[in-house]
Image: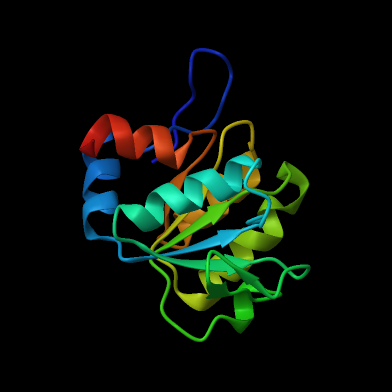
Length: 146
């Protein structure tokens, strides 16, 4: 449940144990905003996650394929079950992506570092999603499971 933080934030990320359990039980990660450019963080992080055994599903309307996987133009078009929606988009897109993550029945939505939307956090949590915000999934995976 979100609580008021000491710097005025009205949300709080799940505990390390909850994040560890999420990462241990997840199989499929849709990466919204995944780039085919190896110099981009999204590419390196998705590749790392793939190497760790996760199924990566790219979501980028400008790319037909990334990391050897078909890319979907919209999260709503992904035909399989998604455990984590990992977001590499600006914060102004967070609410729309949260709505879509809820709609497809994702278990969690993960906003990468510097992506903060308190409204998205509250909405996702209220809908039953685990919400992680302003954290790098690569760093957390390395720290908790590496």
